[in-house]
Image (tube, rainbow over all chains, first blue to last red; front, side, top):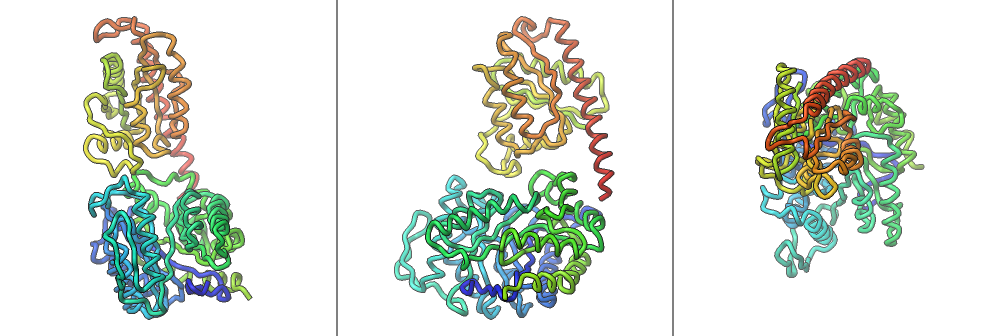
Length: 352
Length: 188
């Protein structure tokens, strides 16, 4: 786990992620300006850092209702504004980017932040960016695999010789600057189906598994498939971290939490995905076996420990800010995480 | 409430004729309901390539978005080669898996022969069920002999269309009420 800067003796890591969505608050119908949203994301990272949260990441989406298209630039500002927290993308769409430029950006962020940068590379769930950035969506899968491999090669080798289909060849190319400690943790972003998890396993890279709703046990399948695939190629799964990421909201009790969060999720998903989140399915989020970490601090702790026992994962990443959640609610959540949830999780998951 | 009629073929006129009757009847009986008829013959729709429906442009986006925003959809389909037409299947392929969740879907089927009566039962309903539709189970099946040029000449078909329209509206109202009552119980 050392290669990925994870120390299991300190317990499971707790992180926050934002997709960088820029949506109206459903209660008021109003949307803050993009500038304010960006400032608030940076402020959120600062608060998370001060609360002792381990990780903060920002996503890349090139479509309406998002504000962090230039996510590496936002992360650079966060690097400067924070001290200890790890910072990453969630995710970088490597398929439509040049891996050389991505690596240069993130190695730079690593130097600015004093060795805190990581890359989570994904394939994009929406595909408007292929037209926007000049790529053919017919190559959706191959673009990702080839560029992801190149990104990892650049991470391993300072002088790169490479040839592929979607980018000019590299001949004894020096990719600079190098990260503070030689390499960056690079994760593969994985969505719902085990297919993508298996690919992550075959290449022996850490997996960042995103989830929306449903029972935690249904995500166990992807994690098992990932580890089996990794073992089948001779990788030691004790050295491969797994992160899970999804909706999170803490309040004084479950009902308040459901009430506070639901309109943001439902209205936000309508705008960004074209379909809301069914209320019945969200209500099941209250179940202790649900993957949605919502409820009172005690209920969330119970859920997270249940998930940890089942998954054996090294990092959980909470998404709190989706759908125009007002900043005072975010601040309150960070406070609850820092004072109640984080200490309990660390205490119960630290490996002796 | 918004009800969308979907005439699912680019070929021939019988399904469109039946859908015109259906939408006219709907507007007569329920003038307060917003209605729209989408005839796939009037649109240039691309084949599904797996993207989110919001990522399409032009007619493809318009038609899928209109269906997604409806409370109920009345599907009109001919039967070709003992199945639904490719144009209609393509609409299903363009939409998300749960596209018909919280929607009522009813069916008007036209066919050259009574031999095709069970096609809707065996091929269309399973698709609608998979996509989470609340289905109006009785559909209107109209044969070649019920038409004369662009008119429906069999009174029984008129009566059946009227009942289908009523059932579609009644079920939409009923399910909406049930859902609202259930959601109110959740209290969030």
